[in-house]
Length: 282
Image (tube, rainbow, N blue to C red; front, top):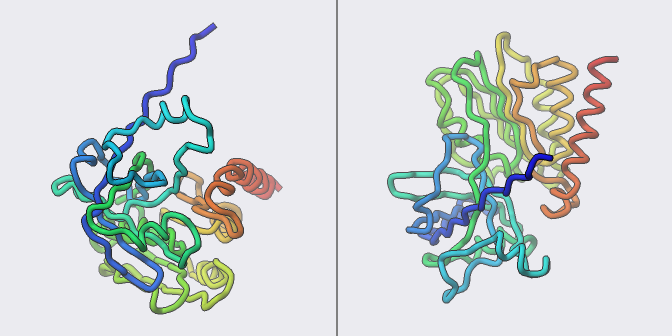
């Protein structure tokens, strides 16, 4: 019988709020820094993400925090709540970590924290994870998502090789939520406005209407799980694109908080993959 190996201890980083900026009516940018990020590093992925731990540490809480010990020794009701956020940027030189938060008033957890954050506040986090980066050998790129995917899309555009074609589709609530993006020559950015509609209602038809250029495409599609499923079917089943050329994932699901979505995500993914396999072999 093989002895089960212990899982490596997870490093909890603690960032100090350096600045807070209201980018749009519903997007807040928080820059974290400080010695608590001395061991933080990304592998250069455009979709690098971190797990934020709530509640944040209080003024007298120590910098060090052993999450594994907390989970082993305390009841689940006392465990920190995690929220997943994409890294907008990481500067190893200045040790500054930038995270953009979608904020919808007093609804939610992380967005509410960001709205009230002030320089000097602290925030604990795990990570980073992530694995997508624009392939410089691809003939062209497709990037599509909603507000939650916007930080990764923006980071990906900054990594695109000069002159490499890309079609970018970003669905936001209205024109006030648009942000400047690094759209170099050959990059076409399509902003789509929900105007109170269902997530994906404008995005899916817009991507479907695209006349796909010839050549090898690498696609990044992230956001609300319902429209992600629809676009995945378009790419995998209808257009028969290779699975390895796609980075497709539901960041969230309409009607679920992150805890509920993460608890059901694996089953959801299995269902989508089964439907996809059946369609591909029919």
